[in-house]
Length: 114
Length: 112
Image 1 (cartoon, rainbow over the protein chains, first blue to last red):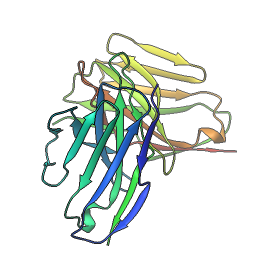
Image 2: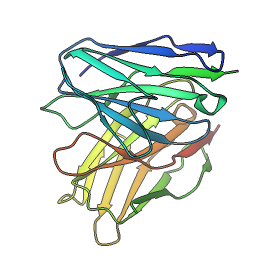
Image 3: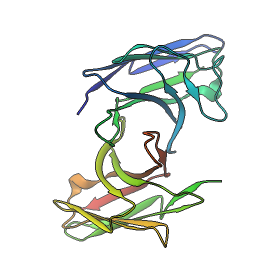
């Protein structure tokens, strides 16, 4: 299994600014992902964080808006850039191992843009 | 386009009864299907996985069925307890990818 720590757990930000969310896993994992969960809705995959290379983005999400880094097997960051109120959401980091098929999730970052 | 639907947004049942949640999908050929539990303010927690060639899986009071012909999974909680109250999400994955596509979730409330 893997324990995922995300920070910050919540933040209130001014529109036009950027926020970087950090995700730390307690063991080496193969895959890391970032999801968004809007209030009362399910999770939507933003991108797959690839170690040492550019992230793979899903349709509707672009690198300029959501730059992602993954410098090693246990750490990744997601930046929400030039924020607007529409970016208010919960952002979740997820990880999986090569051996298992289940996904492990952080507790999420609740972002409010005012 | 791929679509995953869970039967209802909210389900209330009496303690001790069996809760049955439904997950239907279209335009998808999943290698496996997973169920997660999510409590308010927390990330989802994995419960059960069932593969495309399996019909049924059990874990303690939980049972999952998977019908690839009907494109449906049923998730049962027997002898339900108030502590089972949470949102339950089904998720599909294809092949070796670990990327999951989630349903909208069903909020289960078990009444004492």
